[in-house]
Length: 336
Image 1 (cartoon, one colour):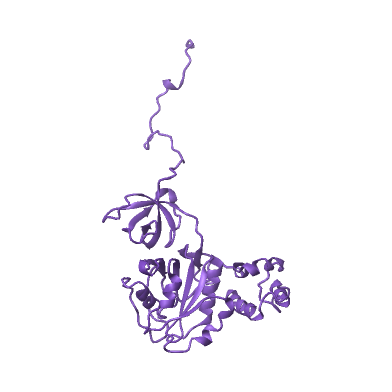
Image 2 (image 1 turned 180 degrees about the horizontal axis):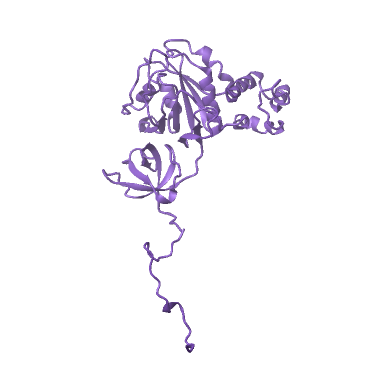
């Protein structure tokens, strides 16, 4: 058969289109430069409630996570970018297309051996550790663990002692004064005025065991919160009255701000925290621990005989009582 001198090109070949079409796919995604800023206030079964511009006076917007974010975790307190219907009208939904970098993170694990971190709240400025001085009795172990999580996550800790009409708060409070953290006291028969002043204009997370009066405080701070108040059970741990983290706006006439009510928890795992994370949270100690030997737990002799923090005490740059208080908190990181 004679060979044709014609030159063939791709137009001579019929390509059968695939079932999904023949349009080329691209990984380019829109940058959503016009996305509106918002703060996540609640999370519920794949839907996020957001406050546009963090403004509690505007209608809240319900949003879903955009496909391009994949499984990017989004928690209460996250600052996000929204597109779509931002009216907040019933049966409308927007899309979360961007999650901004977090300034602080409150994390916990189920226990000290659990490798999976759970982000409780993002971008909170303060962690208010709520503890009753009676009914149930206070436990330093839980408070110490919360302090560790606060320091490691970049939050400023505040200790709030409730039910001080039932017992003297000073013996328990004295254990934490050397850490230079605010220690506030509240009573069931008085308004939490001092606490309200500390929270005004800031984003604060409240954490505490069930039954310590955390939801009672929230009801007093945010009168329309309608948070359930549970009775303390006979075993002293109480039943859970808050089932999911929820950011509530504080009254504008009291300075505004947000308070994040978190679920009552029975354990605060610290598998994600290292001993260096604690002193590193203090400006005057962060540089000193760089001279510690590798693997130093900063507990001092005999466990850590060459800890550099001891040299600060010898030079008069660190109060012995403050170092003792810090090391008591560090004990919370010990296994078991």
